[in-house]
Every structure is written in structure tokens, then in C-alpha cells.
Image 1: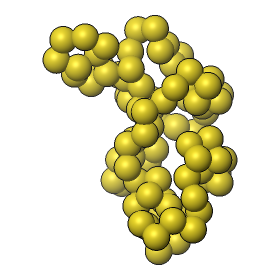
Image 2: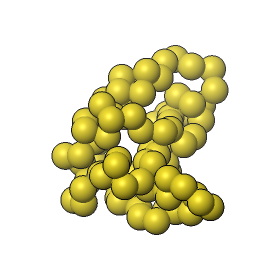
Image 3: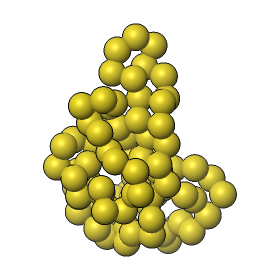
Image 4: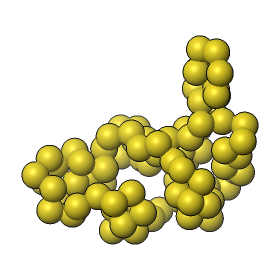
Length: 90
């Protein structure tokens, strides 16, 4: 399986407390998957295609949130929400 083109990557913010509901979703502008793999320390040769193509959800730390900020139009406010990098099927 090669890099997948039928997905949309999104940055999703969840409540920090309470029910931890999804509160915001920001579409990620086009970004090279090799950049994302390096940012999240994903092996491009990983045996799990979903891991290799970054289909799973990945929690963002502050460094990752800052690195992705230029790829979303909205502010990634990690003081307000817990963020994850996720995928939506197109």
C-alpha cells in the first residue's frame, strides 16, 4: 500500500476535562507525509500499513502542534484543548 490519497488529515481538539468531547476540527493543508512521519517518529518501512500511512490517531505535544500550526488556518490552542492528528475518509 502506498501513501493514501483518499483521506483528509485533520487536527482535532477535545475537551481537557469532563466527557472529553470533540470540540473543534481543523483541516490540514497539503503536507508531505515524510514530514509527518519525521514529526511523529513513524518508520516509513513499518510493517503495519495503517501506521506507515499514518491512519491512526496521534496525540499532539506542544512541539508537534507548533510544527503543524502553519498547515491549519485556525489557532491550535493546546491550553484550551487536547489535540490529535486524525484522518477522515473522503
